[in-house]
Amino acid sequence: MATTKKKPAVKAGVKSNAKKPASNAKKGLLAAGLVAGAALGVATAYYLNTPKGKKMLQQAEKKALELQKKLMKELSKTKKLTKQSYEEVVEKLMSYYVKTKDISASEVPEIRDYLMSKWKQIEKEYKSVK
Image (cartoon, rainbow, N blue to C red; front, side, top):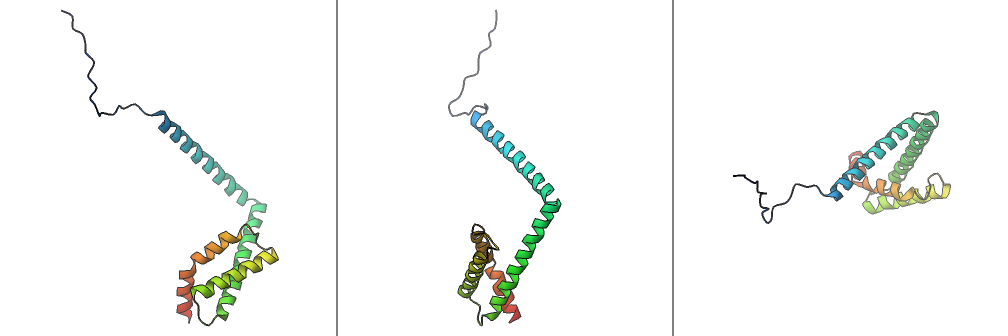
């Protein structure tokens, strides 16, 4: 008697182990994104180590220090520091920098948001000094 092998019956509700093509495509895109990000990071690091890149960093550092000095000078003029007065000082600085074109108008919202995110830290430092 010859025996024949029967295929196991597929039970309802059991998922197959076959991978979906969409998940492979997502993994491929993720890998490509990681490679592109790493390449961009390497290129940026290389550029910043060139004389032109170092000069750009020095200029950015100089602008940041000037902004900090102006901010501290304006804050020292306020008798009582509140969030509203801090916002007014930040707005005043941003309008000054836009007029002088030391900061491009496209950079202003990002810088404003950054300065506003530092409110709690500024408030603590201001209270410790006073």
